[in-house]
Amino acid sequence: MSHTQAAEWFENQAERMAEDLEILCNMNSGSENLHGLEQVAGWLQDYFGPLDVPCRRISFPSFRVLDDRGVEIEQSTGPALRWDWIANATSEKDAGRKPLLMTIHYDTVYGSDHPFQRCQRLEGRRMRGPGVIDAKGGIIILRYAALAAKQFLANSPLRFSVVLTPDEEIGSPASTPLWREIGRDYEFGLLFEPSMADGSLVSTRKGTGTFVFKVEGQAAHAGRNFQAGRNAIVHAAGLAQDLHQLNGQRENVTVNVGRIRGGDAVNVVPDLTVLRANVRVADGNDQNWIEARVQQLVQKHHAPDAGYRVSVHGGIHSPPKLLDSKTEHWMRWVEQEGHHQGQPIRWKPSGGASDGNKLLALGLSNIDTFGPDGDGLHSDQEWIDLESLPKKALLVFQLLARYVAEGPIN
Image (cartoon, rainbow, N blue to C red; front, side):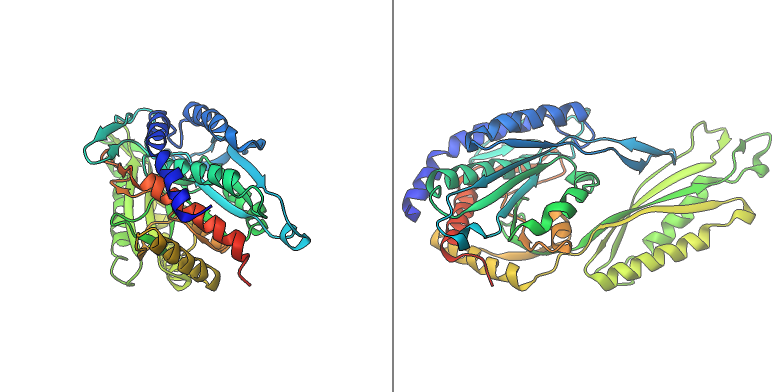
């Protein structure tokens, strides 16, 4: 299939891709909306049906999280969905090739009670809606690229898996064990997170994690017995200040004190506060540094003799994503195929993390921004450039065709 024929085929799918995206984004699949996750998973099973391969629903066990009352609770998520597509190998050597992994998440940051629930078409082939670029637009691109591969590369040695996960927006606590189990089974990973705001693809990513601090004091009547109390909110505020002061001490480390929950009736000295801080790091040295500083602050503020106890949970869950030689080779392929499309490819580092961080740490090289162009992710102004749907799908298809022609990188 020539580049021109492929481009025409994808362009003919453009409006259908936009319509599919609108349907998908109008179904809520917030990370903690179990009913919505199940509904969307069922829709996706049907949506990928034209691949004509069985869908494997992978159910996850519940996982433990610390809630805002400082209590460990069980939390559940939806299923992962997996399709394994195998074309016709033409030789024993081809049959031994590792498959490619194409993956993205289907959960979003918008819960069932969030006011941002519906898509709206805008001028200039744009659409505003929950998850249009993060990352349901990526699902649309992945699906059409896979269908094109099935249609036009069926007589090639191409093998790939499609995996859709339900929990990336909360750090992939359930699906990380799946990546640990299957990550090394693949030659290379293509992830469908959105591109940067200017259309650039991501080169490297910072690592990230959330530290959760449980601060315990002593409850007391705020009027009758105030002096007997130990105010956990005030004590946590001091810890929050110390955490914030870590910013600027190391160039590529940021600490965001993002949430503090504590107290109830205002005439009671609060005995419990839970503080959550998100951390970003550029490399392993940064990670070691921030982990050591966190432990120092816990030791500083943990003062049982004075009536205060401090413990920390969580940590860095996505290591920094740096470049390796295989990724750099694929980057050159992406640049060359983009040139053939008349779309110059630019690369930028990102402070955000993705499942690509985890996969690289587990040994699977990957590029993780084959999703659409747009901006405003994680806000009620999230929008997509609908023209990027067929363009990105064409780019992915051309990469699959090139992989068929040139084979794995030695």
